[in-house]
Length: 475
Image 1 (cartoon, helix red, strand yellow):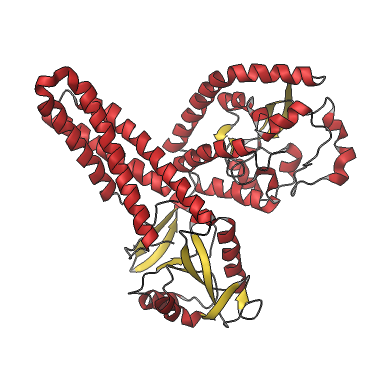
Image 2: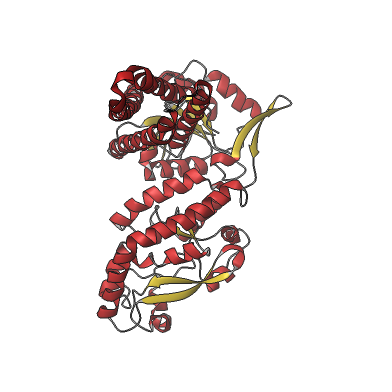
């Protein structure tokens, strides 16, 4: 749970927030001014009445919606999909208000602002925010613009938090101190190089004295409801936000809600959405997106097919049975990247397997052709899977499609991957691909199944482009 209590932000947080506000304001002003001037020039006599007022009103409406939706709250800026979700919600609110205003005022020009101005503002502001986020993440990887964190919990859970924060510095956390049950770490007064500054009962005192920005409470038997409540009270007046890790399950995103029932704060976990309106939208986006991408990449696919045929004997395509939603098998289509008969030679290479868990992988696989190596590095070999997306056996985003023998070895937990369609890309694609340990790949797939949302799909598709360009974990 991450409460969004208003707290004083550090200098860099204040600067970054001011930069985002300035960026949104300037982007909105440029768009509305351009539209007002370009279209209003045709009606110069009534420009002020018909265009100037609408332009100025749209600017105020958009900025007001951003403020009301807390799209500039420091807690959401620079990380996660929530920042863009709030931005989208704000602009949708502006569209609704504009439409209602146009009906009330019987304005004939309002359609231009609804269907041109707001979408243009959305495009420009989202691109600007993404560029600002890239700059922020670059600074965080260099050790700047990080929130100092005091972690308090058991040795194992705090150690896991330290590892995750170091692995993902772009999230902005730096664990500077630790409190444990007995005030000791694995190395005496340290835990993975982080000083252990005291016991769990000392947390509030250290926060007030040393000014940590985040208190991360991880699972430990010490943390009873009364003690957590008392810690929250004791932290009042400090600049720190208290973040409590749920101890029951690894669920996040839109499925988590905090409700007050009978005066008791309860963490409500809604069921994962496998059907309904959002899934219909996903199906439509999949089919339309696949059709558009196939048209765009058609010349490249023809060229790649010819290169594969010229490079080695065999067909241009490779077909393989995979397991999809609800355990139904389908045939996946890819460009051939190995020599003909490569499947038969797999048994001879079994002792050299470098894959994680049930996956068979070799970094230097002798069966891969020269053209195939280049295709794999940039995931071009997977373009024909767009036909699988178009026909409905796959999705643009989802878990990795397993082989039948892999699926047969799944336990009940891992079989939850089969509750949704497999994807052309997914969390595994943007997180390291073949370099990921098996357990981490499974965790990411299950996280996608549990926490799926349209915003998460959009984020994955955006990040896939960078993962493909750099080719990390592809072999």
